[in-house]
Image (tube, rainbow, N blue to C red; front, side, top):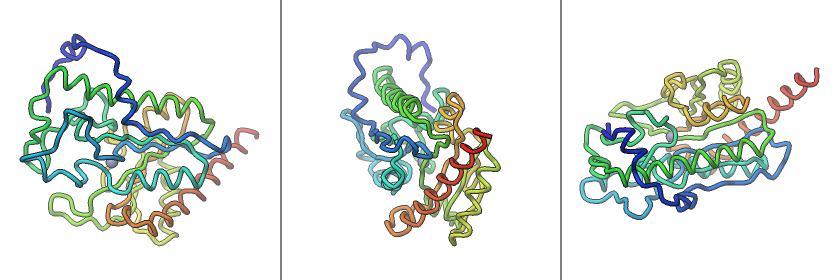
Length: 265
Ligand SMILES: [Zn+2]
């Protein structure tokens, strides 16, 4: 964990942080009847000026530690298909993880696979302030997205590595939830019907605070939130993403219609 006191955060100089907006991609909602809003916290491995994965950190480039392969593409494709709004983080989770609350031990991860991440080993106040500016820019964009939309559902899109610390993962699609168990079970069943090896709250549970971003925004805005985890080898395949998009589009349209009827009744 990076040891940096909150006092240091607040006493750090806070110059204009609008530069951070360049590292957040917002897709405007094009259909006022779009059934969902989309979030993608780990969509990019881009590093702002002043951050670098070199020397002993070079092995992290292109890996799931840096970003979720295929997740940004799936988010954009689903947004286009549904006319939905979306926000994609345009910076690496290694700089700061927008899917973690500010008090998380892994907000700025300093160890991966037992190896120290040199870029994050000794974070000074100035560096931390720049990282937090990115975190805030991402969540301000999500605030805007949720405020601008009437969609009843929110979906966070991620991918996971097929082999984690030596263990091969059979699961292809994880439907993660914390509060929305029934909704998750419905989506899980649809992925099974479509021939995917789907699991609920695998490869890890949404109840562990690990779907922080979409869950937090959904909670304050009255949305129903789920997180999708697609195995990385499938997420980078456009043909598989098209099948996943078809499942998600049909599910979200039908659920949104059902919720609208319930509201009318
Ligand atoms: Zn992720």
